[in-house]
Length: 251
Image (cartoon, rainbow, N blue to C red; front, side):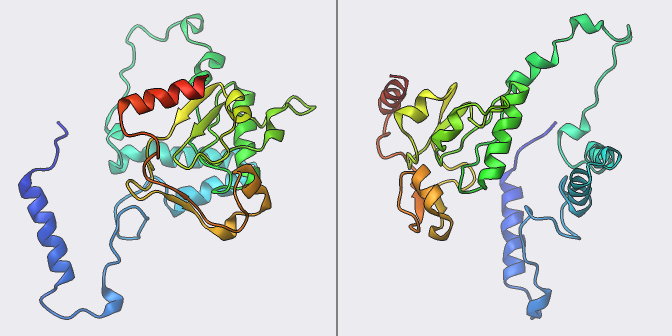
């Protein structure tokens, strides 16, 4: 059974941090633990993405080496060996009656329709990365997410070769960057970003030196000026306000 923290656990963690911050003996600055668990460290917590897996992924994709990619997949799939995640402790139970007929299995074309990319805005990532994600998901029949930075209208039209750089999911966030009627009508799905998931309570920021003419035009802002996404929406203070925004976006 997976349980939560108790008050004793919290007290122990507080005492551990206090002892690290106020040690009994003086510790040279270079020996201090930098802290944190999100970044991989040689003697830190185990991570799925570590120097080995990242190197295998980068090398296999750059060299188009499928055998090397299988090494990467194997390294990630063996997460159960190190108990990296909760799901790594689960195993599939094989059907004693054997495999079912392929005719009874949902086709790939239907399954991938449920796939969607994470919401990363144009500006936080490059145009090349942003548009390539959209093309790939459109080829699959899945959905890419524009993020909160708007989308260049030129991407709403298909290319001559049939590829489409349009993101099916359009995001509306607190800064309303790039949100126009044309932007909204070129969406299969609208997503209202209620808060900053990566930075809870802090809001988001795109530094001014990243806001070039293209990004500024896409976001309907001034090039060179930093863009801040406020933590809350300026017009949502109740369930009724949210309902009004949904109504306005749909109509």
